[in-house]
Amino acid sequence: MEHPGIDRIKNGYRQFAEGRHEAFGRLFAADAVWHVRGDTPLAGDKIGREEICSFLRTLAQDTHDSFMIEVHDVLANDEHTVVLAHTTVNRDESTYTADEVHVFCTRGGEITEAWGFTSDPEGRGKFWF
Image 1 (tube, rainbow, N blue to C red):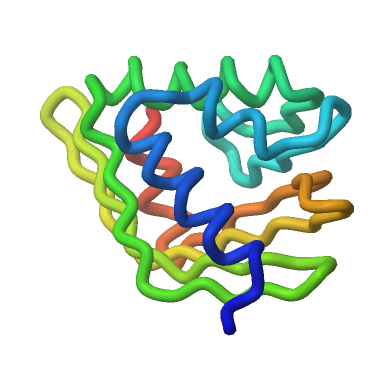
Image 2: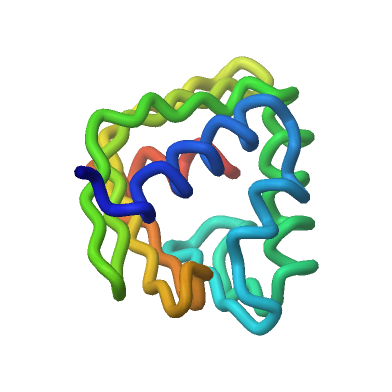
């Protein structure tokens, strides 16, 4: 039997892909923090469910809804959910594609903290500028 965190996060990624950012945002605690690493205009901590939802909407709008995450595997226990994925994004005349790891801390079934790690941090930086 799979850990319930696996289904929760898979559903969340499906909601993001469908443009239902608020539905995905409901997986986050009201005071959750999403740490966006790097030197892009998107970098910095997104604090609270509302700011996280706004961040997700911005990703979709800035990439004309081309932000695609192919989930390869999800690992979960009561405290963490880890997503192994491949991301492809188109913006203007540029494409960013990389393998990524997304790490979520969870408490009581809600995400309290999140990080993303990319196999191509330099490419991601160039993509957003």
